[in-house]
Length: 428
Ligand SMILES: *Cc1c(COP(=O)(O)O)cnc(C)c1O
Image (cartoon, rainbow, N blue to C red; front, side):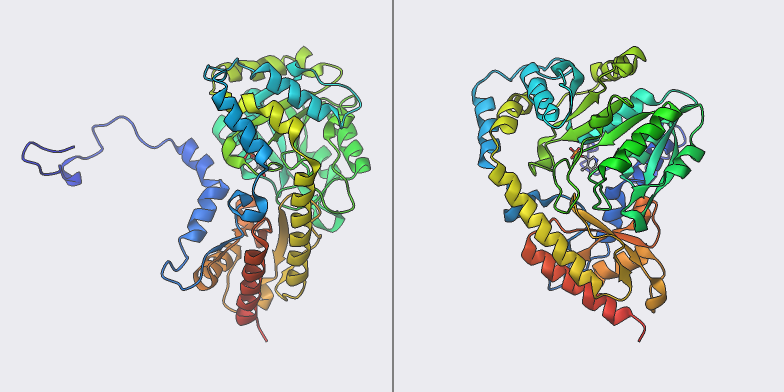
Protein backbone atom coordinates (compact mmCIF):
# COMPACT_ATOMS: atom_id res chain seq x y z
CA UNK A 1 0.00 0.00 0.00
CA UNK A 2 1.26 3.45 -0.83
CA UNK A 3 0.87 6.56 1.31
CA UNK A 4 -0.34 9.73 -0.34
CA UNK A 5 3.16 11.12 -0.65
CA UNK A 6 4.21 7.89 -2.40
CA UNK A 7 6.35 6.54 0.48
CA UNK A 8 5.75 2.95 1.61
CA UNK A 9 4.57 2.65 5.26
CA UNK A 10 7.49 1.18 7.17
CA UNK A 11 7.09 -2.18 8.85
CA UNK A 12 8.18 -0.72 12.20
CA UNK A 13 5.23 1.64 12.35
CA UNK A 14 2.88 -1.29 13.02
CA UNK A 15 3.25 -3.74 15.88
CA UNK A 16 1.31 -7.01 15.94
CA UNK A 17 -0.11 -6.59 19.44
CA UNK A 18 -3.42 -5.03 18.49
CA UNK A 19 -4.28 -7.79 16.00
CA UNK A 20 -6.12 -10.85 17.18
CA UNK A 21 -4.97 -13.17 14.39
CA UNK A 22 -1.68 -15.02 14.12
CA UNK A 23 0.06 -18.25 13.28
CA UNK A 24 -1.95 -21.46 13.38
CA UNK A 25 0.52 -23.79 15.15
CA UNK A 26 -1.31 -26.92 13.99
CA UNK A 27 -0.85 -25.89 10.37
CA UNK A 28 2.80 -25.01 10.92
CA UNK A 29 3.35 -28.42 12.54
CA UNK A 30 1.61 -30.22 9.68
CA UNK A 31 3.39 -28.24 6.92
CA UNK A 32 6.78 -28.71 8.58
CA UNK A 33 6.39 -32.46 8.16
CA UNK A 34 6.11 -32.27 4.39
CA UNK A 35 8.64 -33.56 1.86
CA UNK A 36 8.51 -30.18 0.17
CA UNK A 37 9.52 -28.32 3.33
CA UNK A 38 12.47 -30.67 3.90
CA UNK A 39 13.58 -30.54 0.28
CA UNK A 40 13.39 -26.75 0.21
CA UNK A 41 15.84 -26.68 3.11
CA UNK A 42 18.23 -29.02 1.29
CA UNK A 43 17.92 -27.11 -1.99
CA UNK A 44 18.73 -23.85 -0.20
CA UNK A 45 22.26 -25.26 0.38
CA UNK A 46 22.92 -25.52 -3.36
CA UNK A 47 25.59 -23.17 -4.66
CA UNK A 48 23.56 -21.18 -7.18
CA UNK A 49 26.69 -19.93 -8.88
CA UNK A 50 28.10 -23.42 -9.16
CA UNK A 51 29.18 -24.55 -12.61
CA UNK A 52 27.15 -27.75 -12.76
CA UNK A 53 23.44 -28.29 -13.34
CA UNK A 54 21.31 -29.39 -10.39
CA UNK A 55 20.37 -33.07 -10.39
CA UNK A 56 17.12 -33.61 -8.52
CA UNK A 57 17.03 -37.12 -7.03
CA UNK A 58 14.90 -35.85 -4.15
CA UNK A 59 11.31 -35.66 -5.28
CA UNK A 60 9.40 -37.92 -7.60
CA UNK A 61 8.23 -35.97 -10.62
CA UNK A 62 9.79 -37.34 -13.81
CA UNK A 63 7.28 -35.53 -16.06
CA UNK A 64 9.86 -32.91 -17.01
CA UNK A 65 12.23 -35.48 -18.56
CA UNK A 66 11.92 -36.51 -22.23
CA UNK A 67 12.06 -40.24 -21.41
CA UNK A 68 8.99 -39.87 -19.22
CA UNK A 69 6.80 -37.79 -21.52
CA UNK A 70 3.20 -38.92 -21.24
CA UNK A 71 1.44 -40.59 -24.14
CA UNK A 72 0.04 -38.34 -26.92
CA UNK A 73 -3.23 -40.22 -26.43
CA UNK A 74 -3.61 -38.62 -23.00
CA UNK A 75 -2.70 -35.18 -24.33
CA UNK A 76 -5.25 -35.50 -27.14
CA UNK A 77 -7.93 -36.66 -24.72
CA UNK A 78 -7.51 -33.43 -22.77
CA UNK A 79 -7.64 -31.27 -25.90
CA UNK A 80 -10.76 -33.06 -27.07
CA UNK A 81 -12.44 -32.70 -23.70
CA UNK A 82 -11.79 -28.96 -23.71
CA UNK A 83 -12.91 -28.50 -27.32
CA UNK A 84 -16.12 -30.45 -26.79
CA UNK A 85 -17.42 -27.65 -24.54
CA UNK A 86 -19.16 -30.37 -22.54
CA UNK A 87 -17.00 -29.98 -19.45
CA UNK A 88 -17.20 -26.28 -18.66
CA UNK A 89 -19.66 -26.97 -15.85
CA UNK A 90 -19.21 -27.79 -12.17
CA UNK A 91 -18.90 -31.55 -11.77
CA UNK A 92 -21.21 -33.57 -9.49
CA UNK A 93 -19.92 -34.31 -5.97
CA UNK A 94 -18.52 -37.78 -6.74
CA UNK A 95 -17.18 -36.82 -10.18
CA UNK A 96 -18.59 -37.22 -13.70
CA UNK A 97 -20.18 -40.61 -14.35
CA UNK A 98 -18.19 -41.69 -17.45
CA UNK A 99 -14.93 -41.09 -15.58
CA UNK A 100 -16.08 -43.04 -12.53
CA UNK A 101 -17.29 -45.85 -14.80
CA UNK A 102 -13.93 -45.97 -16.62
CA UNK A 103 -12.02 -46.11 -13.33
CA UNK A 104 -14.37 -48.77 -11.91
CA UNK A 105 -13.71 -50.92 -14.99
CA UNK A 106 -9.98 -50.22 -14.88
CA UNK A 107 -9.74 -51.38 -11.26
CA UNK A 108 -12.13 -54.31 -11.73
CA UNK A 109 -9.78 -55.92 -14.28
CA UNK A 110 -7.51 -56.92 -11.40
CA UNK A 111 -10.26 -57.86 -8.91
CA UNK A 112 -12.32 -61.02 -8.43
CA UNK A 113 -15.53 -58.92 -8.36
CA UNK A 114 -16.81 -55.92 -10.26
CA UNK A 115 -16.80 -52.36 -8.94
CA UNK A 116 -19.65 -50.04 -9.79
CA UNK A 117 -19.17 -46.35 -10.68
CA UNK A 118 -20.74 -45.60 -7.30
CA UNK A 119 -17.77 -47.21 -5.58
CA UNK A 120 -15.50 -44.53 -7.08
CA UNK A 121 -15.04 -40.91 -5.97
CA UNK A 122 -12.88 -38.55 -8.00
CA UNK A 123 -10.34 -36.37 -6.22
CA UNK A 124 -7.70 -33.78 -7.05
CA UNK A 125 -4.89 -36.34 -7.22
CA UNK A 126 -4.16 -39.09 -4.73
CA UNK A 127 -3.11 -36.32 -2.33
CA UNK A 128 -6.68 -35.12 -1.95
CA UNK A 129 -7.83 -38.72 -1.66
CA UNK A 130 -5.53 -38.97 1.40
CA UNK A 131 -6.93 -35.70 2.81
CA UNK A 132 -10.48 -36.87 2.45
CA UNK A 133 -10.08 -40.37 3.84
CA UNK A 134 -8.04 -39.19 6.83
CA UNK A 135 -10.54 -36.40 7.54
CA UNK A 136 -13.44 -38.85 7.24
CA UNK A 137 -11.86 -41.08 9.89
CA UNK A 138 -10.66 -38.35 12.25
CA UNK A 139 -13.27 -38.60 14.94
CA UNK A 140 -12.14 -37.65 18.43
CA UNK A 141 -10.22 -40.47 20.20
CA UNK A 142 -9.66 -42.48 17.02
CA UNK A 143 -6.18 -43.56 15.97
CA UNK A 144 -4.66 -44.79 12.73
CA UNK A 145 -1.70 -47.07 11.98
CA UNK A 146 0.87 -45.62 9.58
CA UNK A 147 3.96 -47.25 8.03
CA UNK A 148 7.49 -46.20 8.92
CA UNK A 149 9.02 -45.23 6.55
CA UNK A 150 5.97 -43.75 4.92
CA UNK A 151 4.59 -40.88 2.92
CA UNK A 152 4.54 -37.71 5.07
CA UNK A 153 1.29 -36.44 3.65
CA UNK A 154 -0.46 -38.93 5.93
CA UNK A 155 1.36 -37.57 8.98
CA UNK A 156 0.66 -33.98 7.92
CA UNK A 157 -3.02 -34.62 7.42
CA UNK A 158 -3.34 -36.53 10.71
CA UNK A 159 -1.59 -33.69 12.55
CA UNK A 160 -3.91 -31.21 10.90
CA UNK A 161 -7.10 -33.11 11.73
CA UNK A 162 -5.95 -34.28 15.17
CA UNK A 163 -6.12 -37.94 14.28
CA UNK A 164 -3.72 -39.83 16.53
CA UNK A 165 -1.13 -41.79 14.56
CA UNK A 166 0.79 -44.86 15.59
CA UNK A 167 3.71 -46.05 13.52
CA UNK A 168 4.51 -49.63 12.66
CA UNK A 169 7.81 -50.59 11.03
CA UNK A 170 8.48 -51.99 7.60
CA UNK A 171 11.29 -54.52 7.92
CA UNK A 172 14.15 -53.80 5.48
CA UNK A 173 15.68 -57.28 5.78
CA UNK A 174 12.33 -58.84 4.82
CA UNK A 175 11.74 -56.89 1.64
CA UNK A 176 10.15 -54.07 3.68
CA UNK A 177 7.24 -56.25 4.78
CA UNK A 178 4.94 -55.02 7.52
CA UNK A 179 5.88 -55.95 11.09
CA UNK A 180 2.53 -57.54 11.85
CA UNK A 181 3.36 -58.45 15.46
CA UNK A 182 4.00 -54.81 16.12
CA UNK A 183 0.76 -53.86 14.37
CA UNK A 184 -1.18 -56.10 16.75
CA UNK A 185 0.54 -54.56 19.75
CA UNK A 186 -0.10 -50.99 18.61
CA UNK A 187 -3.78 -51.39 17.87
CA UNK A 188 -6.52 -50.90 20.44
CA UNK A 189 -10.29 -50.48 20.45
CA UNK A 190 -9.96 -46.95 19.02
CA UNK A 191 -7.87 -47.97 16.03
CA UNK A 192 -9.83 -47.42 12.83
CA UNK A 193 -7.47 -48.12 9.92
CA UNK A 194 -4.07 -49.33 8.76
CA UNK A 195 -2.34 -47.65 5.79
CA UNK A 196 -0.40 -49.69 3.23
CA UNK A 197 1.51 -48.18 0.31
CA UNK A 198 2.03 -50.71 -2.49
CA UNK A 199 4.11 -50.53 -4.68
CA UNK A 200 5.97 -48.64 -2.02
CA UNK A 201 7.22 -45.09 -1.87
CA UNK A 202 9.87 -44.69 -0.40
CA UNK A 203 11.16 -48.29 -0.32
CA UNK A 204 10.63 -49.41 -3.92
CA UNK A 205 9.21 -52.70 -2.59
CA UNK A 206 6.21 -54.65 -3.89
CA UNK A 207 4.19 -56.83 -1.53
CA UNK A 208 3.67 -60.53 -2.10
CA UNK A 209 0.21 -62.11 -2.19
CA UNK A 210 0.71 -64.17 0.94
CA UNK A 211 1.89 -61.26 3.04
CA UNK A 212 -1.00 -59.11 1.82
CA UNK A 213 -3.42 -61.82 2.84
CA UNK A 214 -1.82 -61.82 6.30
CA UNK A 215 -2.25 -58.05 6.50
CA UNK A 216 -5.92 -58.45 5.55
CA UNK A 217 -6.46 -61.15 8.18
CA UNK A 218 -4.72 -59.10 10.86
CA UNK A 219 -6.84 -56.07 10.01
CA UNK A 220 -9.97 -58.18 10.19
CA UNK A 221 -8.95 -59.54 13.57
CA UNK A 222 -8.39 -55.97 14.81
CA UNK A 223 -11.61 -54.69 13.26
CA UNK A 224 -9.86 -52.01 11.21
CA UNK A 225 -10.14 -51.15 7.52
CA UNK A 226 -7.17 -51.16 5.17
CA UNK A 227 -6.34 -47.97 3.31
CA UNK A 228 -4.29 -49.08 0.33
CA UNK A 229 -2.35 -46.34 -1.44
CA UNK A 230 -1.86 -47.77 -4.93
CA UNK A 231 -0.77 -44.59 -6.65
CA UNK A 232 2.12 -46.63 -8.20
CA UNK A 233 -0.21 -49.36 -9.44
CA UNK A 234 1.41 -51.54 -12.11
CA UNK A 235 4.74 -49.70 -11.84
CA UNK A 236 6.61 -52.90 -11.00
CA UNK A 237 9.72 -54.30 -12.63
CA UNK A 238 11.00 -57.07 -10.36
CA UNK A 239 9.75 -60.57 -9.61
CA UNK A 240 6.67 -59.53 -7.59
CA UNK A 241 3.70 -58.45 -9.72
CA UNK A 242 1.38 -55.67 -8.62
CA UNK A 243 -1.54 -57.08 -6.64
CA UNK A 244 -4.33 -54.75 -5.54
CA UNK A 245 -5.29 -55.02 -1.86
CA UNK A 246 -8.93 -55.05 -2.97
CA UNK A 247 -8.44 -58.72 -3.86
CA UNK A 248 -8.83 -59.34 -0.14
CA UNK A 249 -11.99 -57.22 0.08
CA UNK A 250 -14.02 -60.20 1.27
CA UNK A 251 -11.71 -60.53 4.28
CA UNK A 252 -11.52 -56.84 5.19
CA UNK A 253 -12.99 -53.64 3.73
CA UNK A 254 -10.36 -51.85 1.65
CA UNK A 255 -10.31 -48.20 0.64
CA UNK A 256 -8.09 -48.01 -2.45
CA UNK A 257 -6.44 -44.71 -3.33
CA UNK A 258 -5.02 -44.01 -6.76
CA UNK A 259 -4.40 -41.47 -9.49
CA UNK A 260 -3.16 -41.02 -13.04
CA UNK A 261 -0.21 -38.97 -11.73
CA UNK A 262 2.42 -41.69 -11.65
CA UNK A 263 1.46 -44.33 -14.20
CA UNK A 264 0.67 -41.73 -16.85
CA UNK A 265 3.39 -39.34 -15.54
CA UNK A 266 1.05 -36.35 -15.32
CA UNK A 267 1.12 -35.30 -11.64
CA UNK A 268 0.16 -31.76 -12.60
CA UNK A 269 -3.19 -32.86 -13.99
CA UNK A 270 -4.47 -33.54 -10.48
CA UNK A 271 -6.77 -36.46 -11.08
CA UNK A 272 -7.09 -39.20 -8.52
CA UNK A 273 -9.66 -41.37 -6.84
CA UNK A 274 -10.96 -43.12 -3.77
CA UNK A 275 -12.45 -46.54 -4.53
CA UNK A 276 -14.23 -48.64 -1.96
CA UNK A 277 -13.09 -52.17 -2.76
CA UNK A 278 -15.46 -53.77 -0.32
CA UNK A 279 -17.78 -56.43 -1.82
CA UNK A 280 -19.54 -56.91 1.51
CA UNK A 281 -20.53 -53.24 1.71
CA UNK A 282 -19.16 -52.78 5.23
CA UNK A 283 -17.95 -49.24 4.53
CA UNK A 284 -21.51 -48.27 3.59
CA UNK A 285 -23.06 -50.00 6.59
CA UNK A 286 -20.66 -48.29 8.99
CA UNK A 287 -21.39 -44.95 7.28
CA UNK A 288 -17.75 -44.31 6.37
CA UNK A 289 -18.94 -43.78 2.79
CA UNK A 290 -21.37 -41.13 4.06
CA UNK A 291 -18.51 -39.34 5.79
CA UNK A 292 -16.44 -39.43 2.58
CA UNK A 293 -19.38 -38.03 0.62
CA UNK A 294 -19.99 -35.27 3.18
CA UNK A 295 -16.40 -34.13 2.90
CA UNK A 296 -16.54 -34.23 -0.89
CA UNK A 297 -19.60 -31.98 -0.72
CA UNK A 298 -17.54 -29.27 0.93
CA UNK A 299 -14.24 -29.56 -0.96
CA UNK A 300 -13.19 -28.55 -4.46
CA UNK A 301 -13.31 -31.05 -7.34
CA UNK A 302 -10.70 -31.91 -9.92
CA UNK A 303 -11.15 -29.72 -13.03
CA UNK A 304 -14.17 -31.02 -14.97
CA UNK A 305 -12.41 -31.22 -18.34
CA UNK A 306 -9.74 -33.45 -16.82
CA UNK A 307 -12.53 -35.68 -15.52
CA UNK A 308 -14.04 -35.59 -19.00
CA UNK A 309 -10.81 -36.86 -20.54
CA UNK A 310 -10.43 -39.82 -18.15
CA UNK A 311 -12.37 -42.44 -20.15
CA UNK A 312 -10.21 -41.86 -23.23
CA UNK A 313 -6.99 -41.71 -21.22
CA UNK A 314 -7.72 -45.00 -19.50
CA UNK A 315 -9.29 -46.91 -22.36
CA UNK A 316 -7.04 -45.83 -25.21
CA UNK A 317 -3.53 -45.76 -23.75
CA UNK A 318 -1.49 -48.49 -25.44
CA UNK A 319 0.52 -51.10 -23.57
CA UNK A 320 3.58 -49.87 -25.47
CA UNK A 321 3.54 -46.67 -23.45
CA UNK A 322 3.35 -48.47 -20.10
CA UNK A 323 5.94 -51.04 -21.14
CA UNK A 324 8.36 -48.36 -22.17
CA UNK A 325 8.07 -46.52 -18.84
CA UNK A 326 8.58 -49.81 -17.00
CA UNK A 327 11.62 -50.51 -19.13
CA UNK A 328 13.15 -47.11 -18.34
CA UNK A 329 12.41 -47.55 -14.61
CA UNK A 330 13.84 -51.08 -14.51
CA UNK A 331 17.12 -49.97 -16.08
CA UNK A 332 17.27 -46.92 -13.82
CA UNK A 333 16.66 -49.02 -10.68
CA UNK A 334 19.33 -51.50 -11.77
CA UNK A 335 21.85 -48.74 -12.41
CA UNK A 336 21.07 -47.06 -9.11
CA UNK A 337 21.43 -50.31 -7.18
CA UNK A 338 24.73 -51.18 -8.84
CA UNK A 339 26.39 -47.81 -8.28
CA UNK A 340 25.23 -47.69 -4.65
CA UNK A 341 26.61 -51.19 -4.06
CA UNK A 342 30.09 -49.75 -4.58
CA UNK A 343 29.67 -46.92 -2.08
CA UNK A 344 31.08 -47.85 1.31
CA UNK A 345 29.01 -45.54 3.53
CA UNK A 346 25.65 -46.39 1.92
CA UNK A 347 23.88 -49.74 1.97
CA UNK A 348 20.75 -50.74 0.11
CA UNK A 349 18.92 -53.50 2.00
CA UNK A 350 16.52 -54.29 -0.81
CA UNK A 351 16.82 -53.81 -4.55
CA UNK A 352 13.92 -51.66 -5.77
CA UNK A 353 11.30 -53.54 -7.78
CA UNK A 354 8.52 -50.98 -8.03
CA UNK A 355 7.61 -47.27 -7.75
CA UNK A 356 10.37 -44.71 -8.45
CA UNK A 357 12.38 -44.78 -5.23
CA UNK A 358 14.87 -46.66 -3.15
CA UNK A 359 15.58 -46.35 0.57
CA UNK A 360 19.24 -46.65 1.57
CA UNK A 361 21.03 -46.55 4.91
CA UNK A 362 23.84 -44.18 5.75
CA UNK A 363 26.69 -45.63 7.75
CA UNK A 364 27.99 -42.56 9.56
CA UNK A 365 30.94 -44.40 11.07
CA UNK A 366 32.52 -44.40 7.60
CA UNK A 367 32.14 -40.63 7.27
CA UNK A 368 34.55 -38.16 8.78
CA UNK A 369 32.80 -34.82 8.97
CA UNK A 370 29.07 -35.52 8.61
CA UNK A 371 26.79 -35.63 11.61
CA UNK A 372 23.52 -37.03 10.26
CA UNK A 373 21.29 -37.51 7.19
CA UNK A 374 20.21 -33.87 6.98
CA UNK A 375 23.84 -32.76 7.22
CA UNK A 376 24.78 -35.29 4.53
CA UNK A 377 22.09 -34.05 2.15
CA UNK A 378 22.88 -30.37 2.75
CA UNK A 379 26.62 -30.77 2.14
CA UNK A 380 25.93 -32.99 -0.87
CA UNK A 381 23.66 -30.29 -2.29
CA UNK A 382 26.28 -27.64 -1.65
CA UNK A 383 29.29 -29.50 -3.04
CA UNK A 384 27.74 -31.56 -5.83
CA UNK A 385 24.43 -29.90 -6.75
CA UNK A 386 22.70 -33.25 -6.20
CA UNK A 387 19.49 -33.40 -4.18
CA UNK A 388 18.42 -36.47 -2.21
CA UNK A 389 15.82 -36.64 0.54
CA UNK A 390 16.98 -37.09 4.15
CA UNK A 391 15.27 -40.07 5.77
CA UNK A 392 14.34 -37.86 8.73
CA UNK A 393 11.52 -36.49 6.60
CA UNK A 394 10.13 -40.04 6.62
CA UNK A 395 10.76 -40.81 10.30
CA UNK A 396 13.95 -42.69 9.30
CA UNK A 397 16.92 -40.84 10.68
CA UNK A 398 20.21 -41.54 8.90
CA UNK A 399 18.55 -43.09 5.90
CA UNK A 400 18.17 -41.50 2.47
CA UNK A 401 15.47 -41.74 -0.16
CA UNK A 402 16.75 -41.59 -3.72
CA UNK A 403 14.53 -41.35 -6.77
CA UNK A 404 15.80 -42.99 -9.93
CA UNK A 405 12.97 -41.62 -12.08
CA UNK A 406 14.97 -38.93 -13.83
CA UNK A 407 16.44 -38.78 -17.34
CA UNK A 408 18.87 -41.75 -17.48
CA UNK A 409 21.84 -39.57 -18.51
CA UNK A 410 21.23 -37.29 -15.49
CA UNK A 411 20.85 -40.28 -13.21
CA UNK A 412 24.30 -41.57 -14.11
CA UNK A 413 25.86 -38.16 -13.54
CA UNK A 414 23.98 -37.66 -10.25
CA UNK A 415 24.97 -41.05 -8.86
CA UNK A 416 28.60 -40.65 -9.92
CA UNK A 417 28.68 -37.30 -8.11
CA UNK A 418 27.13 -38.96 -5.05
CA UNK A 419 29.80 -41.64 -5.21
CA UNK A 420 32.74 -39.25 -5.47
CA UNK A 421 31.22 -37.12 -2.69
CA UNK A 422 31.13 -40.16 -0.41
CA UNK A 423 34.68 -41.20 -1.31
CA UNK A 424 35.89 -37.70 -0.48
CA UNK A 425 34.24 -37.72 2.93
CA UNK A 426 34.88 -41.35 3.89
CA UNK A 427 37.50 -42.50 6.37
CA UNK A 428 40.42 -44.33 4.82
C1 LIG B 1 2.82 -39.13 -5.26
C2 LIG B 1 2.12 -39.84 -4.16
C3 LIG B 1 0.82 -39.47 -3.76
C4 LIG B 1 0.14 -38.26 -4.34
O1 LIG B 1 -0.28 -38.49 -5.64
P1 LIG B 1 -0.92 -37.32 -6.51
O2 LIG B 1 -1.82 -38.04 -7.45
O3 LIG B 1 0.20 -36.63 -7.22
O4 LIG B 1 -1.66 -36.41 -5.62
C5 LIG B 1 0.20 -40.21 -2.78
N1 LIG B 1 0.81 -41.26 -2.19
C6 LIG B 1 2.07 -41.62 -2.51
C7 LIG B 1 2.69 -42.77 -1.80
C8 LIG B 1 2.77 -40.90 -3.49
O5 LIG B 1 4.03 -41.24 -3.78
